[in-house]
Image (cartoon, rainbow, N blue to C red; front, side, top):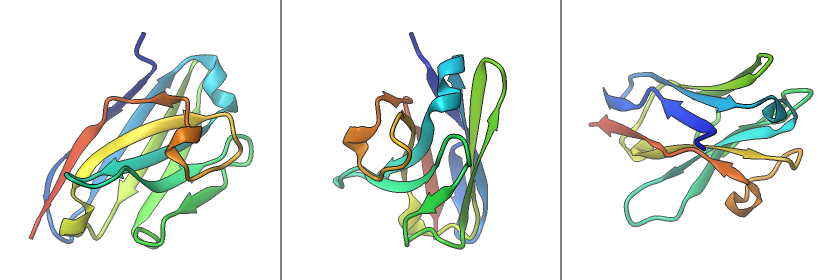
Length: 125
């Protein structure tokens, strides 16, 4: 049963913007912190940003601070997480994954229980 579904990836020129969405189906996700990770070819999966449940505190990797913004909308049976990406750079090219954790906040992929299938973001120079 697929519970996290990402959308919004694509091809964009450097300096452009994209907005990713992640729909998490199930009331339980209201009590999960949500994160975005990315993985470029030949590289390990890395933390991008996360937003806590409850107070919606956001945390960002240094490489995206000031350019990316995470937000979440908690509906009755679906939590939607958005990643607004501005001033994109070629080095932002990767598959972006949405993930959910019961920890309040963490940057470690192993602490996340649920993962989406990923969406490709390609930034051309």
